[in-house]
Length: 459
Image (cartoon, rainbow, N blue to C red):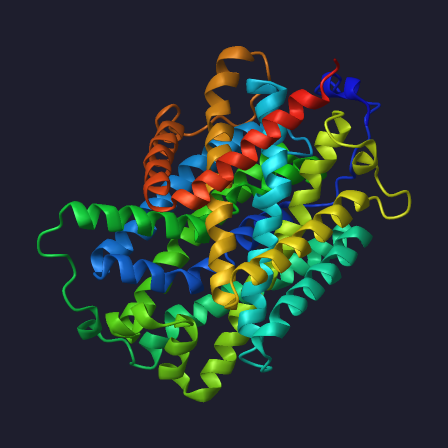
């Protein structure tokens, strides 16, 4: 890539630019929203939240509030994606609202840690639960995770339709599994309100407020992924209708499922058991169904995390593809495969770097669960910062580009996107206070992107 390409980009609707075929419908779009969000977090972060808050009332409150915040962000995303239905999603919105540098930094962080880190974390989570069915030593989990990444890389490089079909199958499995988790305690008479203990803390103070902030950061990961539909907009039929519908249906469904799943955890297990659990869904199913329940839970969670891995594998390459189409990355990443009609080069590059991150995480943290948590902490800081900028784009483009057609307009504007941004500001402050190392590492990565961007500009 020569330096001059930094200044050239395709216009909003350049018919000569390489485009991806429209092969995805409404059901696929809903599947991408649900499949992207429901992954490992509802199973692996519930204990973290319980340890911080220690009371059922605040636990349900924080899952509900972060769900509401996610819905507010998705309403803004729906307007943007219906208005600019192009590959790259938030990259395109940031480019049109704020210019090339913020847009480039979005893609930069997506590639180096957010998207590829999510892939690494989710494959680690998938293998953590797979080993409950097929025992394996800790040392084998890293290579197994890399093997899974490479298989999905091959599948998605071969066919977008195959990738979407796999996504839809895993969504049906994970929603069905969560339905069992929510309903079986009541059907089998194993739900007990005595497990809840005191609902609210006696005298919440400064320490409780700090714990609430830490819990909010933990809950951001289970809700992460709502933005994944946007980079695929170019490949969705009738995106002006289907993307807003998919976001509304998907996010509302997930908020209800998450709150109900947490209720199931706490009605079946005492608070101390939830706090100490390393596999809370398995522990719940052990109480409900005995040893066979542990196997069932492991399969269900494994399918859930596998499906979220596939969703990220499907979404990420569209971001790099859009950046390369604008000349911000090597031209090879903007090529559509002549036979398979996929951004195959972008898929391959993503899979390779995600595998490298898995190796680094396992070398840094020998315990597989610690490696998973390390990856999620890094992902949340970088991802949340640019999610906020993407939501802020709705304000900027309303002012700068009132001429653009808006088939869908953000419900509750300006209050709903403003609520999202306010919540993000609070979460950012909490991350800086309680996840300082991860926040600084994310900041250094962003600054490195700034340096690279200006270095590659024409002299």
